[in-house]
Length: 190
Image (cartoon, rainbow, N blue to C red; front, side, top):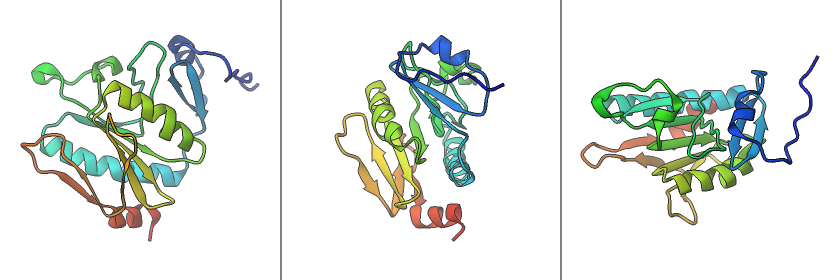
């Protein structure tokens, strides 16, 4: 027996979404709006894997927090559940590692790899929410266009990067530089 159809037109609460069954779908909630997306395709997950490796190596080397991927239940407000593909949780005071998603706070970096079913949500609702929350850097990775949109909290338009993607969250550390042509070739198997 399948799950009954979800009413996506109504306002949802965080508690209602967290009570949904683990059915292989990804559930996200922004300002009461529910987004249901199926499990990502293999290409999407390959992109997440490559990005997580690059970001994680850099974050560890410079002690910038913790690089993680979804599933995660990131929360900025009461009726929210955000599942970023990759994100960097800042260090917690005292150097300990947090155990709950509430301890993440505002990620230093959020990365979303576009999927056909979530592109509008990633570019509009989630982007606006990440900007409003003060996420310093939001990357939208477009596998079809071989580029990354880089958003900051006050930006009206993204920086469109197709060559070298640079991230420098700490001015005392060297920047992370990702050569996008090589990254896309590795992801796409070219």
